[in-house]
Amino acid sequence: MNQSRKHRAGAMKHPALAASGSIKVMDRLVDLVWYLSWVAAFLAAAMFIAVLAGYSMDNLHVRAPLHVSYFENGDNHEWIDFADRPAVVSVTGNALVSVRPPVRSGIWIRFPFVALLMVFLLVGVFYLRGIVKTLMRGDPFDAANGNRIRMIGIIAMLTGPVMGLGMYIQSLTLLRSLRVPGAKLSASLDVHPGWIILGLVFLVIAGVFDAAARIQREQDLTI
Image (cartoon, rainbow, N blue to C red; front, side, top):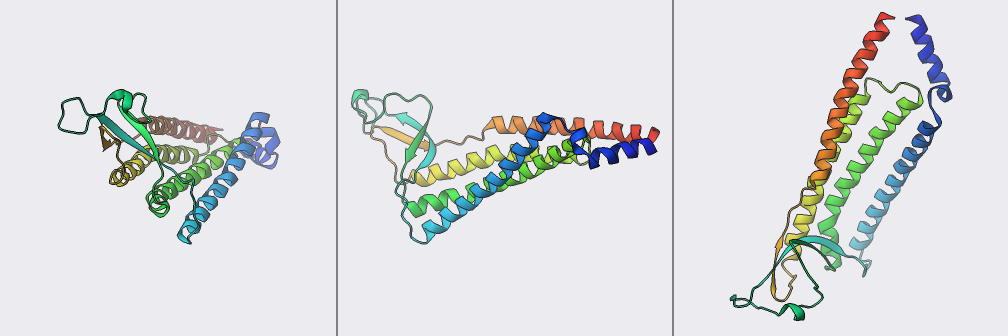
């Protein structure tokens, strides 16, 4: 028991003995992502404040997932021959339409969801930093790592639906003024299931870490 404590204390006093070169590089990269995430958050907030203050942003674009259904010849709608349909070569299923809305309208639509996603990013990187720090001191099965991984998984599962809901609301708002000749546009909701699957994988890994940490504690008690 005493030898185990001495070994742990030595590892914490000399992280270089516990961390390999790749873990050190990972630690630097995660720290870099952490600081860049804060820079991105401040830039997004500054852009929002600038637009509210009246600064013109002519290059602002909003991406909106829309379902495009072209009218068939003979329908009681405006029908345009495919060769004469403007700026459209072919469309199958859902389409991603890029438009330029009124600046204030575009910012108000996007900002709440962008702000929430930035919070998700900062919280996720915060927990990731905590995991990497335990690797640096040679204690990967720290009791808190399971909860950290679980929180990252929950954030990943929420990211997809939040992104999809934000884009869906943007689509509904833009549909009021968006028109494609010869076609009907409708909002398309995509919850990005890849993010949900990724979150589930993290939850499974969190369970594995919880079991490993419990076994590690039991072994420490028997030494």
